[in-house]
Image (tube, rainbow, N blue to C red; front, side):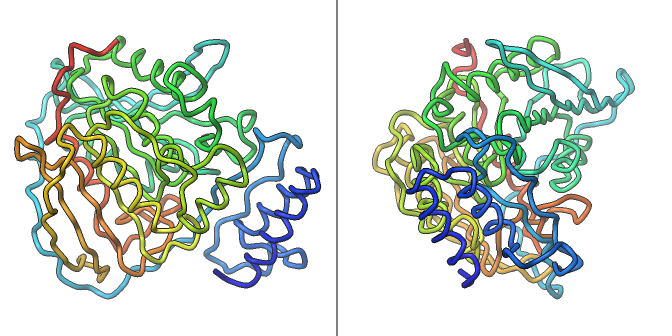
Length: 385
């Protein structure tokens, strides 16, 4: 952790203790955005993303606990061993034109905008649906461009739903994963996002056994929450650079979890199959959080005593080394996977520089998540309610 970050976070702690939440928020935003008090936007590196906007109001709903990430330059070419078979693209069909739909959904006196990608492939039959949750300061178009998930959907025939967090709910458009009211099934953002997912399922031809959720950073933390609160709806979960459910209950515990990975508490109950990506050089969300997401997911599997994982190491085609640990279910399917990205920071692995929060060095998190998801259909799809 750099000295500027430490100094600003100490300042934020003092201000919070004194009850000055407005100035504490500004200090946190400067720390996480990388701007010191005497630094201007003109002094930032040319490839750095802009800092998050200032808070709209001095209340906890506007507190930011996630950051923008700089683009990570690709490493020299290397060799990536074949780790798992990719799903085969579906044959082309001409029954439907590709769609990139703008929508607005309301639930329990709250509304949320979204983008929905509907490919041509597989039209006319029930298809998988993937809910993608962006990180702070991002928006659906940015997240789609960075993860390249629409391209995979185009090839393999699944729908992708991108809800957009509002600045009214959080000044930097972070999902509010660190608040108790947004960690429960029938309240807050989990209830809203689950209802949005069901509305798309009702409007489109979606296979209820193949509905999945994935997210980055704050979006990854919310994806983990949705897996916990709605295991009957989401068949599998992808968490990239996120935190485990129950790791925080307020601003200060959130900051502690992000910096140290020491969770405030752990969630219990059932958890769908989960795939986790985390860089071991992530200075924004400590990599220990990835380990805790994995441990929590293992505890939530039907088999209480998980067998020892199969471990494989490799190097992406652009030189990023990684370690992958796979825990199999009793049926032999991958129940939990943990990808440790060596030397990687806080960014989507294998993403495109067309979007923010991306590390083109790989490995391809989007393709690996898709492979993991499609190997884990919902065992009791009829239970969705």
